[in-house]
Image (cartoon, rainbow, N blue to C red):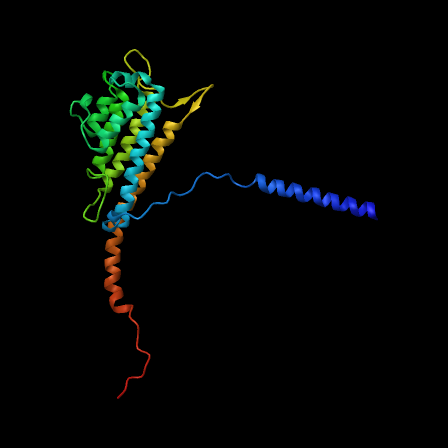
Length: 250
């Protein structure tokens, strides 16, 4: 009995250890958390849609900066064309031009989709990464009404935001497939072959496209819901009223 009891206790202990180990191994790894932001005074002048548009634009520009960094790393010859000492200096110059909505000299006053077309033209001889990043940012800002922060007095054109997503899809395709006159790849970006799988560019474009498509839906829904809410207010004004429950004195 003592032997069997001890053996049973030992097996139970082993089983408990295995279960505990399995439970620990199945615990999901920490992948970060939703960022917490302090309340800012400007938010008092923003509706929910305004705030969403502001955050969407901020995230889109950040995605572009990530893409710019990735493109420069795979195509270091580009930042050298602009006369910069290093990749970081080139990125800083492009970012400042975007944030201050200043023109990019190599694009010769071409903006929006015209600038994107010029930056991805085979004959373009300047810093293609800088020109493409700046022009794409300008296209997005134009689609959002020419601003990056939104307040109650501002509105958005849902179709323009939707079109921006389609422009991003076209730009992604061009980066992957367009070649120079000598047959060389214009810019190294996505890589998918037997020895390498690099689709990080595709994922970053996908994030921007998804944000804009959702923003277009929200803006379209906003005006539709405003009409429905107005009609519901008219109907509910007479129907949704409390009735008296006390006897009326005579």
